[in-house]
Amino acid sequence: MAKITRKPALRKAAVPKKKAKAAGARPKPAKRSLKATKPWAPAEVREVFSRFRAANPEPKGELEHVNPFTLLVAVVLSAQATDAGVNKATRALFEVADTPQKMLDLGEERLRDYIKTIGLYRTKAKNVIALSAKVLSDFGGEVPRTRAEIESLPGAGRKTANVVLNMAFGEHTMAVDTHVFRVGNRTALAPGKTPLEVELGLEKVIPAEFMLHAHHWLILHGRYTCLARKPRCEVCLINDLCRWPEKTV
Image (tube, rainbow, N blue to C red; front, side, top):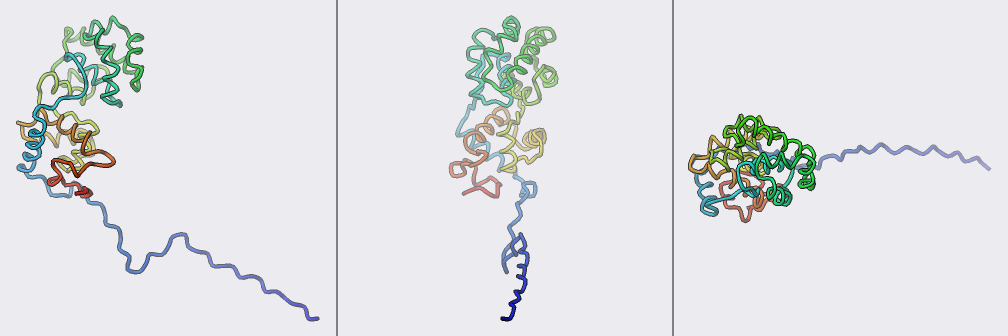
């Protein structure tokens, strides 16, 4: 019987990992840069803040406080924390320590017990005790009224200073938190890579008559309407003016 010789199996050609693009397939459109969008006209900016004012004439900050000192403490505690979480801790705290001297008398260890539900509470307790001591020694027990002086206090940065100057002393400052930063960029009112860029951009375009409440309107708009993941464009007061290319209306 003749011997059968088997031919070696042919190897299959390697299949490329990336699929070839279908003929005639359209490339995905590149995302538009907000800086390349049409700048807001002064009349449009005025219209935006006129609508905010009509809907909420006297917006209030959501951090609870009883005087400039407790406001300062609340803002320092609010870093990387929610206003609701801070309020829950400070209601009892401010009943026993609403002045720099009372806060010093309370002491760092007991202060930690009041704020232990807040993130980074150990560092924040240390800063609050230190800033209380400095307010007493350098400013006669009164919260200072300039940005540079407030920023010199432990735990207080530019945003803290802007909030205190605005809410406690009626200064036309723009505190840029995560909500204001998002709204400034998403709407293209004041695009910027840093909070300072957005702050200066907003100060440049917002008419003076709106500046006292402007940062509150923008915070509330970002917190309840212009949400990070699913913005509520359908109920937005300014959706017809907003420059965001992905808005849903």
